[in-house]
Picture 1 (tube, helix red, strand yellow):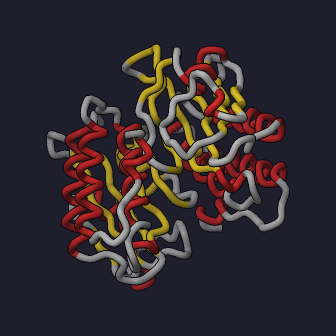
Picture 2: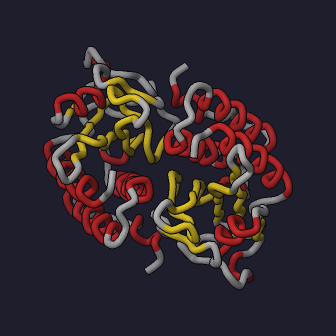
Amino acid sequence: MVHADASNFSAGISKAEAYAQVLEQASALFDGQRNWVCNTANTASLLWHCYHSLPEPSNTVNWAGFYVLDPSNASQLILAPFMGKVACQTISFSRGVCGAAARTGETQLVKDVLAHPDHIACDSDSRSEIVVPVRDREGKVVAVIDVDARVEEAFDEVDREWLERLAKVVGEGCDW
Amino acid sequence: MVHADASNFSAGISKAEAYAQVLEQASALFDGQRNWVCNTANTASLLWHCYHSLPEPSNTVNWAGFYVLDPSNASQLILAPFMGKVACQTISFSRGVCGAAARTGETQLVKDVLAHPDHIACDSDSRSEIVVPVRDREGKVVAVIDVDARVEEAFDEVDREWLERLAKVVGEGCDW
């Protein structure tokens, strides 16, 4: 199988089945490869193609990727591999949905970003967002998975459950 | 302006005008930010949206991104930020179009990948490819820009000229 085929999802599968394929493919890609840039780049691709193989609201995802701890500033996140439009380069731990996930170590599920007092509008098209912390093998938060969508309430408890499982695979499968 | 607007290209502009916007936006994004992961991630997004704003053959681009020197193996490249389907994680300097660009320091413009004896098929949909070396401020090749398209002869001397200009902005605008 050529690598690109990992991004091909069958039509008509459920969201949980699509996420299960993401996890399976990510685990296979990380086998023997612990470089975090390489692995988060392929994971962002898997997530993007997963969402765009699904019906609404999942296919309204307009950004899927990672922020990591900024090596030059311990109190902020910095942009890492993603799929979507150009994004904010750095995010303070004290600001926004990504900052809250990194600061608290808890998943942030925002059903309506316009009603969220501290949302950072990198893209005015985004209407809902989920951000999941990624921890290394020692349990330290080293990154976040960030996914945005063009409609309100695009994410639910299924997304939370599977993205948290993916975060564990990514966090433990890379050297940070 | 929110960051995502940097990825919006006007309809009807020429390829040279679109590349000029990529260069202008990349230079603005790199002002005060030299993190290579962050900067190549945003550059891949700019390139992707540039190509998909243009008519055929440019809008048949199916992969746009970077490979960098593998910190764990000096004789190979490793996957870095990109837009598109899941890709090969590592590429030896001795293999493929990306390897040739890194090894020779010369742009590789492949009009028909099926006729190229040493093409690595990460994606069987790809039919043409351009790979441009990226040099740091000391002139050392540290990365390549790799762009693939679904049709033969998608790239020409205009692409070569502008991607080489972009490679200079990226190479000198980041700490590697």
